[in-house]
Image (cartoon, rainbow, N blue to C red; front, side, top):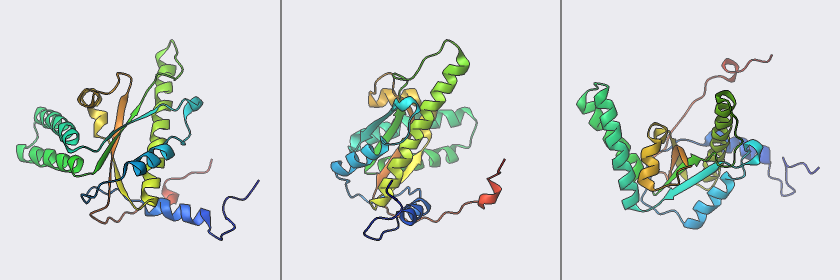
Length: 212
């Protein structure tokens, strides 16, 4: 089998991929520059080549590029965030800052990609234990698809950030975007040209690994 770590042109693919993985950052501020639709399609196609349980490909993607659609989603999610935090008894000024920050992040990105899963093609079981595990397998598959998208976006010179907020309000997101009933929002990816730079660190690998 051909050694894919080095092409005849001399590029060290292993090193390129390692550098790409380590240099990716979660960027939350973007320029207003639009992202071509063909670029978005290319990223989504890369996402669909992730591993998936039983090769059922449970990922689904809802893409929003129109300001009105992003505004509607951001306002709906912000209203729920405000209500939840008020119920928690949080400081009103902190709540409004949090809501404003959330709104700015969602509406300030040229592209929003809501990442969902569907159990439509997954296996079914009569007991809750195996049913729960099957759902987790779908969620894991969907997360790996999102990582593919994030890495290729970075390779294309784009910036992106994974946002977990839809997990807290899946029904609201589905209703606001008029998604099919079986689409379960897991998160969303904000995407665009970076308007900030970010640094990041990782804990020493030895603190997270045990050979057994």
